[in-house]
Amino acid sequence: MRIAISTGGGDAPGLNAVIRAAVLSADARGWDVLGIKRGYAGLLGDDEVVPLTRDAVRGIAHLGGTILRTTNRSNPFAYPCDTNGIITECDRSDELMDRSRALGIDAIIAIGGDGSLGIAQRLHEKGLKVVGVPKTIDNDIAGTLTTFGFDTAVSTAIEAIDKLHTTAESHDRVIVMEVMGRHAGFIALHSGVAATADVILIPEIPYRLSKICEKIRKRDQAGRRFSIVVLAEGAYPVGGSYSVLGPSLPGQAERVGGVAAGLAQEIQAHTQKECRSLVLGHLQRGGMPTGYDRLLATRFGGAAVRAVADGRWGYMVALQPPYINTIPIQEALHEPKRVDLNGDVVRTARETGISFGD
Ligand code: F6P
Image (cartoon, rainbow, N blue to C red; front, side):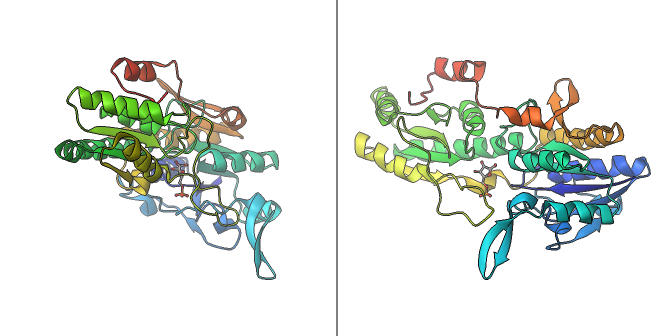
């Protein structure tokens, strides 16, 4: 048996722990493991395919990033290609199938977010034997309670909010902090509630500037002269739409974000309070995975190899406590996971005085 592992899309803390656990579990069964570098680029001649031995994965469980590297521009169905100097998108999926056959690959473990799992599903429909492992710091994949990387991102955001509290309070300022989450507000919600933000803005609840300012003014009148606003990059006002950061490269998804600076200016203009903003950005994706993420990632790696052994093609591993189960990738992608507006986290946030700007 020879399997290959690929990591595609944005990285997430815990990827290396998945790779390590999958390699060791496969090796224990006497299987060969290959690592496809940079998504699927390694299979399409733009990078390498390397052997993943026990030695290759020694001492990596605690490291952020991915030893296989990654890209959000290696979709074999829309691969960037140069046609007379113009970069367009080409379907190179047949080439990928041929190349994996030539390398004697029996199955692929595809570790990725919704985009990469969508590609895995299409490759599965073409006949490739694929098992998925869900990965995203945004936690927006259905069917799994959480994805690894989410807990680390939330912890990073909490640490940042804690630090902002002391400086905001010293200066009587409003600080607007933008976190990741293009379509789902889990990072903003969980970090904001845990670190006691005053306003949390998420894509699931379009906001009104007047409501945000009302909350800030009320705090002022109560003697709390500073406020912390945590917003997901995909948050948007009622009747508006989310901000996009410049044009994307061919084959690259739309880059969402950049909303914090403008919102801070608007809040300042309406409240006459000094307002500052920051974008936490890729700090949320870097660094060591938390213990929770390391354990989840390791469990996912082991479960993915068991799924391969059981021939669960087109399935992905999913955390359904207390178990790691497998569910069809298609089912997970059918409806993306979003913040439950009637869930206890949102309700508790409201009951403890947090405003959602609505
Ligand atoms: O999908 C995870 C994510 O962290 C999103 O929240 C964010 O919009 C995106 O990645 C940023 O990706 P990139 O690093 O490719 O700009």
